[in-house]
Length: 179
Image (cartoon, rainbow, N blue to C red; front, side, top):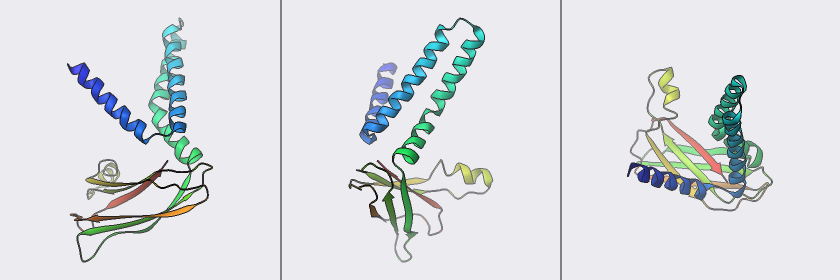
């Protein structure tokens, strides 16, 4: 029963990945997975102990770095975009947050979807917490814009959050990702 639940959770997360993926990102991920599989087969088939250790280390390095390589390839090589935060702050006289971000498509491909995210951070008390709280956020607000952005075209996206329960001085970070 536990393995059936694991398979179900895996399929749901894979479905979520495919809903956000493009054909290019799936192709790049497939090539990276094929490369890791070849390294794993080499590690299993080699007879020499030193060569086997090197192949296992190469497999672990390639497998663990795969998400970072995929992110760099997609965001800096295939889909580079310029973003500027035009306006981002809690409103003074109401419990709301206003966010406006400009994006310019510098890639050769058309962008079809952009995800704008506002993450409310916890208040840090020291250096370690300051960096850790960028990964472990208090609350995340997200809005998806399904608009076509042609190469060398610019658009402005606005996001308004009603009933923003955090103080006006709570730290936050804004991110925008487009595919």
